[in-house]
Image (cartoon, rainbow, N blue to C red; front, side, top):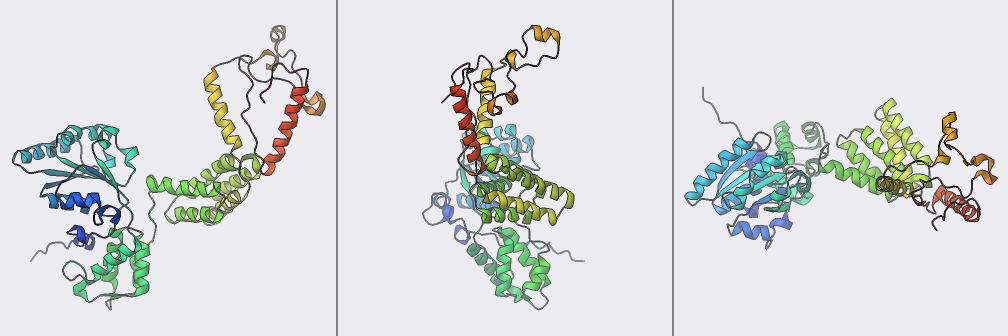
Length: 439
């Protein structure tokens, strides 16, 4: 029985063989760009390639090695450790003695811990090897400063629709590496859908195309064939990575900016990508206090109700309740006065240390406490004119009175502002004032 070599996936077969075949990343590889000039000159340097999946990080590293006629070695940070790094360094050192450069490509490089990253430093520094790391995570958070200072960071972008469309048409037509020997055709509507489903990921687009080609009985990929091939069309959304925090940040900023439409878009993007609605519900509660505050205190209750609805009902009813809360918070007046006051009060509490509670503010449940002066001269506000003990001081004796909360003239907080201004006037007129209040 004859054994046939396994067929390489279409995405692997269609890897660009030269810089001119590389689609997308024109900001890095366009004519005259520094990285392209470096590759074409055969002068490799250590770098980190940061970008979403399917943007060509591995392919670009291989092209760098081929252009410089360097030995290409590859490690996966998921599977490798310090022992593998040392073995790679020894091989690179041996090749260097024979005049050949070595490029060590590390996929998922962010998964190496700090000590593993440190293992590269002396060999990157002395030129034993050229380090190229690929990562989908922000290098600022995942790599130590010592390594970052020795490499250049290049940001790869998700492929544009035009670049994806060009790549997919090339794969359909290429008889040598692609699907051109099948006489395959793709209906325009199906191609549009395929580009959308790829979502900026070349590997994903080519994989879907290959599956659809296998399902196309008549040699025609139409929307029904593509729907069968793409069992799910979830967008790019890493639940613990950069895309996650970028999208929740966009949602939060849209609410703060009073753009209900954009806020709902980012919310639905996150749901479409598989985000847990309860996570969004918790963040919406935060928005209600941080960005709406007392300008509309109902916002917090609306947010809490949406959270409860999601817990009780699940999807899709609960998700609609969260959308309700997001639209409400984005539409009402905004105030960060409570948030600012909270931060300022926290800072003051840390700076002033453990100041004692003034005697007149302490409870006196025992005879000894009363003898020690606990509660003396305390003024019960409900017995005072307007229900306010004008001139009273509630701060520690060794701490100057401070004004943390400054209501803004928006929504209900405008009324609160008027009330506090009235109380300050009463303080300034009161003979009970113990020390000057801030103006």
